[in-house]
Amino acid sequence: MIPKAYKGKKFALYLRRSQGETGDTKSQLERIKSKISELEKTKQIKKLNRAIVGRDIDGKKRFNSERDLAKTGDIYNEGNGQSGFKFEERPVLVELIRRMREGQYDGILVESIDRFARDFAGLSYLALPLWRDEGKIIHSLASGQTLSS
Image 1 (cartoon, rainbow, N blue to C red):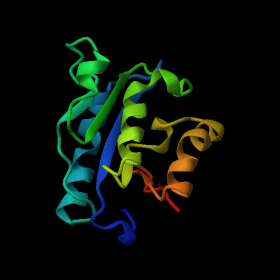
Image 2: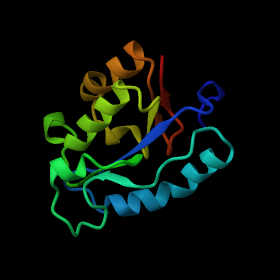
Image 3: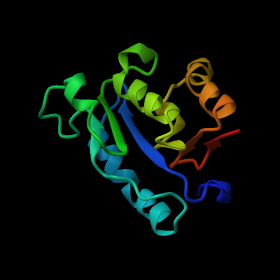
């Protein structure tokens, strides 16, 4: 559950499957849909636009950054087999963070915090400025862990 102080905030959802992991982001989304719906229903977060920004969730269309990052929606799909260590190779996350810094979002929902990075150095590099300096929220739907200022 997201802390009450975040009630009514605008969140985006970030999906990613690491290299070597089984499953796909479509399955990841299916696992957490009910949690998102519950957060919306209880007005803990604003309703998410279910359109997908980034890679095609069905894997049928080749990724085109100009086209796919210009889309509107609140679900950001980095795709399958995307490294958690090479942030520069994660254009969907870069776009999400850009939009967040412009004020479109108050926070990011993830299935688990390791969707950002598996190690603390990577997580700190990416997330620390967001929540400490900019007051943004990162929330794990699986663990309930929240990073915020």
